[in-house]
Amino acid sequence: MKAAAWKLRRLETLGEREIESLTDLLVDCVEGGASVGFLLPLTRDRAAAFWRKVASAVALGERAVLVALDEQGVCGTVQLILAQMENQPHRADLAKMLVHRRARRRGLGETLMLAAEQLGRESGKTLLVLDAVTDGDAARLYGRLGWVRVGDIPEYALFPRGGTCSTTVFYKQISTGP
Image 1: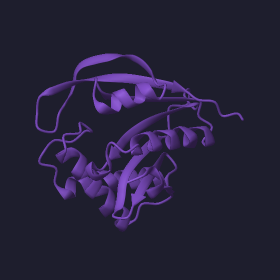
Image 2: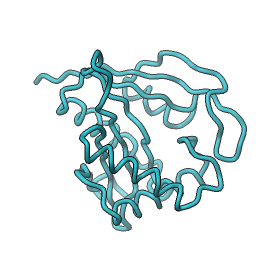
Image 3: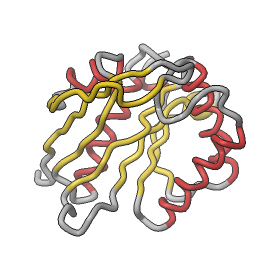
Image 4: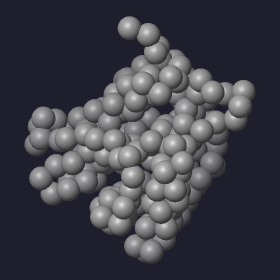
């Protein structure tokens, strides 16, 4: 599959159809070992409840959701948490960059990240921050894309099947100008 086979779009709303597709994606990622806030077994109800909270934040303009679609449906997503404290209007948190196992190792993660950075610029943000499992695939991707590694926090979270993992905090300054 080539990157051209994906279509990226921003979800202005998340209805039940989108929530179902994103639930499938989240369950696939967690079952594949991704440390993205959930433990196994991840039920569809718990995953859908997460996406319903995201839908509420999108409706309020607090969060932006990008999805990648292939011939089978949603194969990736990334979020920008736009709503920050009043002394941080220039910043957004990048969160839940998820790629379905069927679409991994084909450049989709990079495509999603670059689209999220562009969305940050379009939203008037100049600083993006994120965290990722230390030395994991995502952390290596972020480094390749010019994100600056701030440091590691040991025993930050659990893997879906148990056992602790450290996280690495990254930032990237982006320009909103031409």
